[in-house]
Length: 357
Image (cartoon, rainbow, N blue to C red; front, side, top):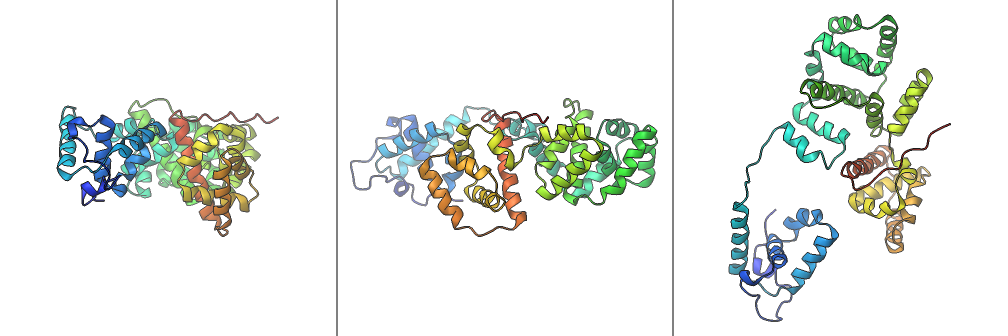
């Protein structure tokens, strides 16, 4: 994206009215910021404006509205002043995975952060299994000992037979039996779920080896994975777990959060903020898919925003045709990911799920 070709025109907010603005030294800090944003142009400045909260946008609007035509020379001087001020800071930037975690950690949920880091460390899904194949048998067996048998089964099903057998020999007979039975069912799982299980275990192992903190709860990991799977697959997996381990299945359900949980677990006052944080097209797709499936979530969201905004959304929803199930569920997963990110950033608090009796 390029800045506006003619910076003086880009800032001509009151064309033909009044005299040119004072020299840059006479501008207030908000006005100088408005000059720089105006010089960038609407397209290039878009990502910056999207990061501003409402108070900052009010300040920008007031400053920009006060400006008259600022000529190119004054624009250049304002930008030069900004660059000089920036030069007073230590602008050295560190790289590496630890820095990624430090920068993104406060802003995205752990499940998404893990996937982002894993994608950077492992360019292809095959590398996940290569990485796990290199883990020592004792270390991998100890780790899988406390995992759900189906998780262990998925991992062993992707390793070489000799390697898997050595790990299996380290389990007690009952656990070895459960894992072997799980291996027979692993092939029926969706490939994306298998890859996510492998990536998740790989991350946890690496974190433990680097002293990066405590391991996540197995139910929490399974729940976070199922948050992003299709409804059909989620119900299938939970149904299977409930037949053999109902207590664990109940814990997984408590750790999960899906699009359908929004009315029960999000405060009505947070509905407007959520809807503003999600990409509008994605939100409409998610809501349209919910309408097709008799979801109460749409009613909850429309009930807790302004009537004007709700009427506009109803009109937009009416113009969207029925979506493919895959597209609708992908949009709902993006909404869930946004909610998890807001929760991780402390901007939204999920109400604990009701206990089932």
